[in-house]
Length: 466
Ligand code: SAH
Image (cartoon, rainbow, N blue to C red; front, side):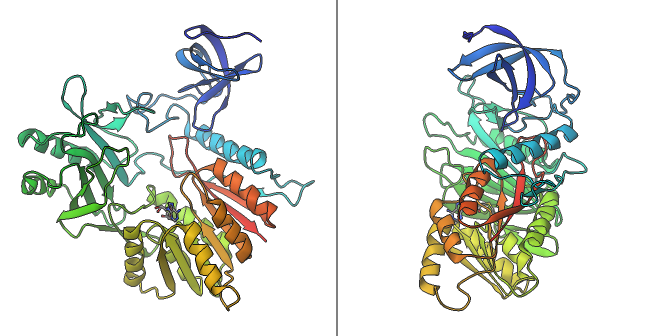
């Protein structure tokens, strides 16, 4: 086989898409991964790094554009790390995601799709896309830093896989309110000499700006992550931010450490109560800065409907909602269940969850703070044998790394009739599906919901039945 050198130029037909939305083309079976290339393109590319079994290349010129290729809306779509597939038509994006998840479940999960010949395989339902795939995000997180070369303040988005900040006037995925909020904070920093954070020396003040908008309530929250434990001239900032329509909560969060973790432990409200509200369906939710809340409220509603449908709950069942965040899924299921238990690692999120149960008059939900892989086994050990120890349904909605092995082991012991797995990473979903299927479950249904248009990510609901 031919070997390739760095900087060597090649001509490449892109024939597939990788997990993160990069194009893949092969020469004599040897694959090249090319950012911004899409299946169907023929390109000229430069080899950046050649390993034994694969290489990374940079797209230099599009010789023949793919029929799926369209012009990006955003001028920094390629540089910014936020979007990976903005140059792909939305229809092609949906096809790409459907194929990706299906292939992972077949390849890693060792499952088969349902066909006439194979009626026991899983049923893959058509992906649910958005009617209008821009402006969908209710949350924005802007890094703020000192430019290492010019010393100027930079506020924007990270360029892909780096800590270089790209500035932009408008992100097409987010709310238009973000732009005015960023401008107000930028002006405030200039006027009062408030320093941006300097990553190298761990000095300066403002590290991140977090904005959340309740799409149904139109309530707006701003939280500044700062290194010091005080925000200079905070009253001046508050006055200016109150010009933004819907401004409901302004706070700062203190993160003094030299770390990549965005938020610290302490949050101080400087205007309002420190949280905002929003609705999913007819359930009202209180959301704090540190709590996880789905970023695409329009699609979240569809996702939860599908999850609820998959649980098969009709009003009598006992259900666990693991990785429950502020209790969104738990409370959505509560009206169709006898009892719901939720488990979540972030204490503020559980505070929100309990409050959310109360403001919605829901009395059959109980929440635990802790790691799902510790809380569930302990609870089961204490309750094994008693009535109600075996749930009818367990719902899991873990972060990208998937479920802990210990947790899956406990799920297998508790033997719920159904497991509903909500996943934002199909590779770990497939890995965990295999474990559950080896332990006596059958994968019945897989439904994708596109929560993250223009990016390589997608959300999946999978139903496993014992
Ligand atoms: N189901 C919720 C949240 C899903 S995101 C919703 O739809 O809104 C995943 C959540 O898992 C986050 O809130 C995160 O804080 C939490 N988490 C991460 N690791 C955890 C663990 N080991 N045990 C319990 N919760 C965890």
